[in-house]
Amino acid sequence: MDEKFDCIVIGGGVAGLAAAMTLARNNMKFLLIERGEFAGSKNVSGGVLWGSDLAKLVPNYWEEEDGGWERFINHRRLTLMDEQSAFTLDFKSSHFNETPYNGVVVLRSKFDNWLSGKVQEAIDASDYAMDSFIATNIKVDEVLMENDKAVGIKTGEDEFHADSVIIAEGVNNLLTRQVGLQDDYVPADHMLTGIKEIIRFDQEVLEQKFQLNGLSGMSNEFVGWATDGIEGGGFLYTNRDTISLGLVLGIKDMREKKKSPHDVLNHFKTHPAIADIIKDGEVVEYSAHVVSSGDKRAMPKELYKDGILLAGESANLLMNAGKAIQGMDYAMRSGILAAETIVQAKDKGDFSSATLKEYRKVMDESYVMKDINGFQDAVHLLHTETMQQKVPNLICDFGRQFFSIKNEPTPKSKDMLKGAVKRHASYWELAKLGFKAGKSL
Amino acid sequence: MKNLKLTERLGLVSYRNQSKSEIKPHIVVDTDICNSTCPHKCTTWVCPANCYTMDENDQVHFQVEDCIECGTCMYACDQGAVDWNFPDPEVGRGVTWNFG
Image (cartoon, rainbow over all chains, first blue to last red; front, side):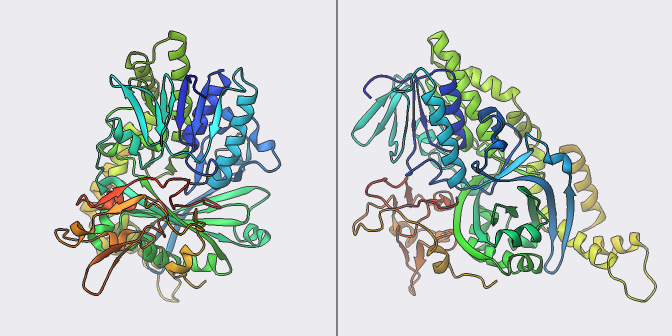
């Protein structure tokens, strides 16, 4: 392997594998390096892969008997919680049964491994079947730079050379920092810790519990009491015979409020609405991983430099603007676009910023940066105390009154609402919130 | 469902190179900083694997064996005490997720 590659892709996650697939399909000679035993072995997500880009990489993936995904989502829930209650917005539609699916739940150790098998098939079918590789168990120590242009990578004593490097190393982006695209120290302000348990059930029990049909699945996000006063939220996704139950918790907030993520997870699990769901399950894995919040202030300075492109969480491409936690779909799209830019660069014979800046342009024109740029106010709003605590408390208070039947004269709903508002916030606060929400969403 | 203790949770994690008696730590913590100038010692509660502990004299200790490579401490420590890296596949610790 002393020959030069067109591209070295660092990281076998969704972004790296999407890039690799695109490179293979375009007959590029590349090396994908993964530090784990296999692609996916180090990776953790919530997680739902939203949107339909997967069908671009693996056409008709849904026809496969046992593909790498768990369930497709046709049932969405958003729950506001206080200590005793859960008030849920619930939407289920057979519209979402149609392929390509609107989103699939994945477990990364299985999904990424499966996708990496598909990439290998694409390599085998390419002109470089014998010269492109997926190499596992290798940790990249350094991106090799010459005159401030990437020329390859270093691992231990070994060097591999390439015209370009796609950094898809994930949120803990040490190489992105090494090449100067991100500060050496990234403060905790806009970073969160994702923490989750995989809880197993008898598959039939799980399907009855969540009213699942075949491979249909449900996603449920939680706001309010779930996080014990810490900025963030909860999630529950159905897999084949397990659920992914977890939280994302602001690191700065945990530091200041002296809360441990595993304690907050225990707190969440004791909520009556959650306890009833999980009571006959068995925890089979516990995991955690940092995620970015979608706040642009935490993002790397640029997505490219001479010989280098950033894809996925390396560039902090993740956002929760209230509708869904999107990260893997951003990783997939950015990986595809990064690889397409490398294909163009090879055609031109120029891998400098002059060509690679095209990546910035196509990213800015894509839904990824359009959404991240367009929903910054929503991200900020979602992380305010009003949205995180007062609104869930208020709504649950109202719900409790509205649904109580007391064999006495029932107050008008507007008076119940008035009372709930008074107890938890103020009209002025809600008016401000409504105005901001109207603008940002 | 009974909540699990953290040790029970970590017992479900598959760690790498468990048969090796000597491993190369992928995170190096300058606990002198934790134990002299740090105003909060937050790693002792934000770490999801409890790799940072406080003894009865309020001294911070660090062990890398239980680390699940999440990265939380790298951001939480604003004192420059945490030198964070990825574990070496051959001689490091770290995880292999069964589900992920």
